[in-house]
Amino acid sequence: MIYAEDFSPNRNDFKNSDDCKNSDGCCDLCAQKIVENSITDVVFDLHLLVDWDARRTLESDYPDYIGEVLFSYEPEWGFEFHEALREAAWSSQRALESFSEHHGPAVTWLYRLYFKNFSRGFLGERARFASLARDLIAKGVRVWALGNASQEWIDCARATCPILGEINGVSASCESHLRKPNIMIYRDFLHKNGLRVSSTVFVESDLRSLKTAQRIDCASAKLFTL
Image (cartoon, rainbow, N blue to C red; front, side, top):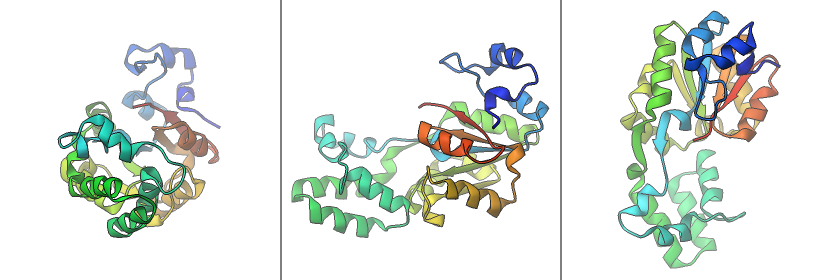
């Protein structure tokens, strides 16, 4: 298995390069190093390119502690549970109906308002990663995006993030009905786009997806935390 830190023949040179460090002191992606190591394709997690926060949808209407009534984690039938179903192609209406069956009218109202204000959750591109993507494109590297997202999320992201229209392609879980960290979403993506795993880098935003990407023979993977 090859890691992003292993791209350079001299790993110490790569890791100590000033332009290849992130805020944690770990090796960062560098467009020039990508090219030098014969990487042809870089696949960003969608959430690294798109500045999105679900809590923004309610913050102008309610204080944070009210929003947490909706967003606080529940192992079953809660907000994240239903968002995962939407990312697997459930419609907003279907998710809302299911949510209402397991919650009272007050919390259901917050979920309804979340959908009404959905576009407020987007603030455009994440400048750091959008800039890196453009650097890679300028050097002839093909850039892609792959992630868990509903169709509504993708539509809003495209409207607010120009970088999604500049890269080679965007794939979301709602299209394949497969969600990260399921390894099949990676294999389906590679096959659909004709990419070689030996020259592809996956740039991930969470550890579980990173571990999955590393299980694909010869694929490189790099983790960034938001």
